Length: 256
Image 1 (cartoon, rainbow, N blue to C red):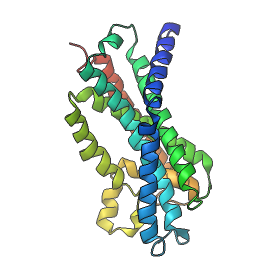
Image 2: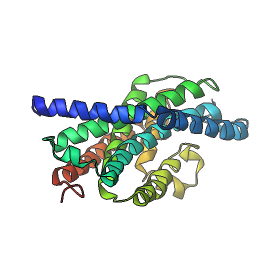
Image 3: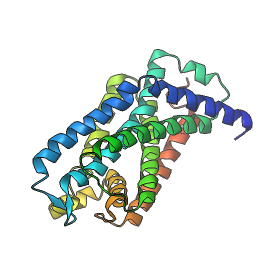
């Protein structure tokens, strides 16, 4: 990329970060509150009834899952909502007349999504760790999976934003694809507690590997090997990013 392209990507990135940060009470504080409510309800009900990995209390187990769920959902929401809003309000034309390449668009939108996802995830962790300290067995795994997961969801949000033509289509994508895959990925339970058939189904869900690998960084144990999770998440990021880049290159549903 040329210096002009990099400067343009940096400007668009700054605009996207500023867009969600100016309403941070809604885009950052609200998801943190939602995660705390999940923790209070599920933790209170199940803390004395469920032990995971032999010795880990349920509240401690739940915290990494809530953190990663918040990272993934908000990274997706950032790029998808920004793009669909720009398409519907008509201000996307101001980006289309610039000489920005598809790479610049991708880096700006996905980069801002990573920032929002990590900001919300950090907020959730700082608030929930007061209820139970989950530990930090391998911090590098935490950072890697959080960044890769946020990047993958930011790219997926780009795809959804390019595909959707109205808000109800975007809502359907989030409610019928993103939410079920997130909630059925082991956020609230270990897949080892499931019957064999549902364990097999869970292993087909790429979100499971993001959360399981992320949780490994806190406890040093996980349902599957973190290296397996890392390879699947990295491969998913490459595939989703490649699709998003190709759609941007073609101007899919944004150029006449």
